[in-house]
Image (cartoon, rainbow, N blue to C red; front, side, top):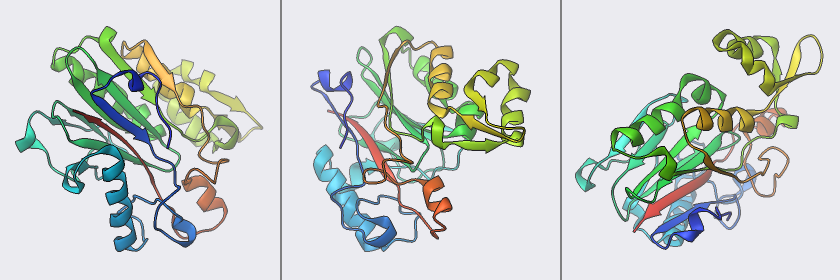
Length: 253
């Protein structure tokens, strides 16, 4: 369990970037796998989600996650009637109290947001595709539509894959350069065909571009810190057939 120093200052906010520890899952999913889309035993995943609900102090039905598809789609919960589980999107902005909103991740970055003046929370799932296609910009835009001032917004970027372990090919590099030539600063060339990509820096830049200056980073690497995190890329390299997902949750009381 990992926490934001910035968010811990607010008594009405409960949050956690959960590690993979202290759950019920076995084998490659050991142990707190919260990915209902994984091939893990559904019974164990639901037990894990119950454990997370207990830690965050909400009912199991009040822990809301998304059907994440690496999109730039943002869901808005205005009131209790609008709250729905497993909608297809990659971010939630919520004005509803006592509802835990969560992001599942396994190398992508979970981002938690809070506007302490307007009392609005948010969470976003940002891998390279979401970040490139505007998930961060769209999340902040939704806050702004609710009259949130960027000077009052806090963004906390959770554990994700570190640059030194994020090797990519030239076609990947070209996707970023074709959108903005200056994106080359987020890549380090290894040889003619391979680069290292700095996902965290790219995400931080997108948050800054959106007008938020109050940013915190939990500088942990999901790929190398296997005792704490699941990693899609590590599982691929190990030729495992599937992988677990960690959960990051924020709730407002």
